[in-house]
Length: 218
Image 1 (spheres, helix red, strand yellow):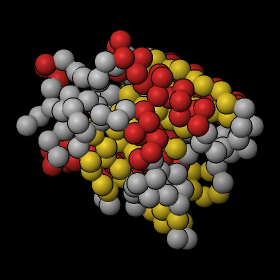
Image 2 (cartoon, one colour):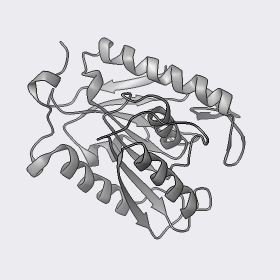
Image 3 (spheres, rainbow, N blue to C red):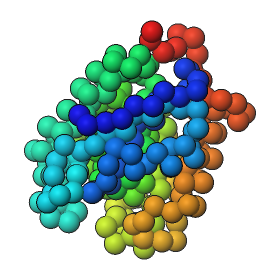
Image 4 (cartoon, rainbow, N blue to C red):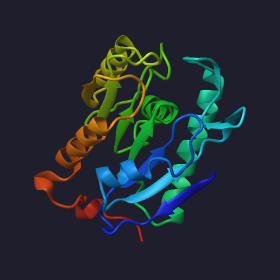
């Protein structure tokens, strides 16, 4: 997978896995990730699907209508790539936290929907429900932050509420921030996400770390 990797200043900090929106690149979310955790390692991915000249993580049939067969295939590819990247870069596979926007947030949500231990947590900006009518894996204790806009024409409030309910029903701990805008990622959302992340992964405002048994693999 086309990607970039940047090691963090602390080996015990989570690796933030970055999932861009439609037409983006693996580097689009670097400023957001730095705002969330300047000490974290960064693994930015570029989607393998092209819509015209725009990169995406999976195909869609129309605006808001996913190609579910392709979604399943691509979700499996991303999961396998994260397994490989953890080995290649000496990261702790159990300490990866997704940061995704729009199409990228949908891919990160799909990882949660299909693989119980694919992510330690996730920050999802303007996500949709990736699939319906399936049983989700056990997500007990997995923290998820959702940023949504009350005027989002692509992800209306009822879509966000449904995603929140599905994740909570599988045991995830979900926090949703409602902004006043539409589908665009805003500074207020970034600030709320950073505050949530520090509270969730960095108790007391200290640098993020995991316990000794979850220390990064050498």
